[in-house]
Length: 101
Image (tube, rainbow, N blue to C red; front, side, top):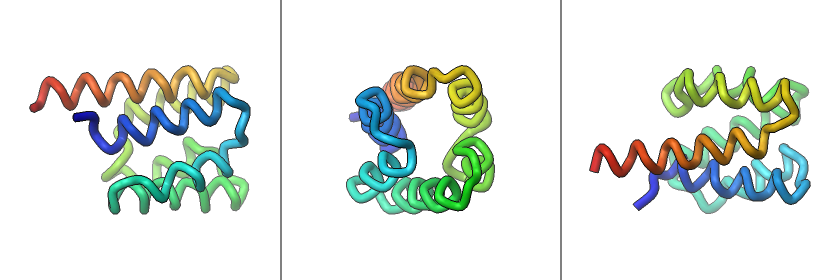
């Protein structure tokens, strides 16, 4: 079974790929997540709504988002390939979860 982050990143990637703005995507994805992940994604939505980048806000939640997550999102924001890189994070977390379980 995929991890909560794998599911969240997959849903976020799909919405961004469809052209849904980041803030709306984060708010839409959040309700279906497990408590800890939902809280972090709602925090991301709040940070983005306050004018911060997704990367800046992710750094405020190191208990949920690893350095790899933050670095890939930062590359995605700077390169304009955020949907693709969030999709890669989804696959990474799914694979990592399989290896652990």
